[in-house]
Image (tube, rainbow, N blue to C red; front, side):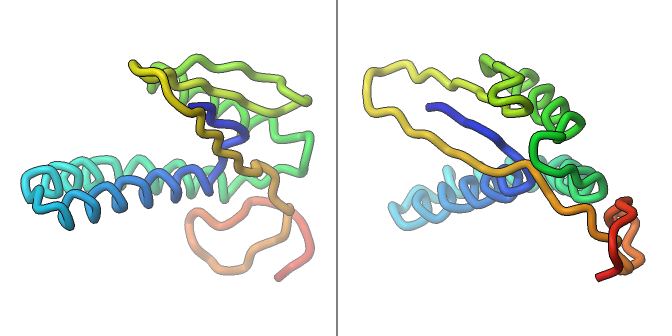
Length: 133
């Protein structure tokens, strides 16, 4: 499986993937599998939220996502994936190789974000100096 250009959508996608696995396990009568997946999702949730909030707080325009790309590449490497950086300037590509032959699945997400000044007052609000929203 190739994972390319991951960002906060990746974080949310990962949570959705874990949730989908739990639903599939539950619908096929695998209560223990559902419970295990739900437990793993609960453990991952704080780190995933922290990553999402960090990326949200530091928006970067297209082709300037150096900080975000470094963060994404670091986390993918920590997951044991083969990572290539600098793809089309700031892109990140990670390859997850399965144990069995089969089709390739590609996931893509944008990493850029507009530097809009956010006035929400939340601790993870954008630190950008753009135009107020």
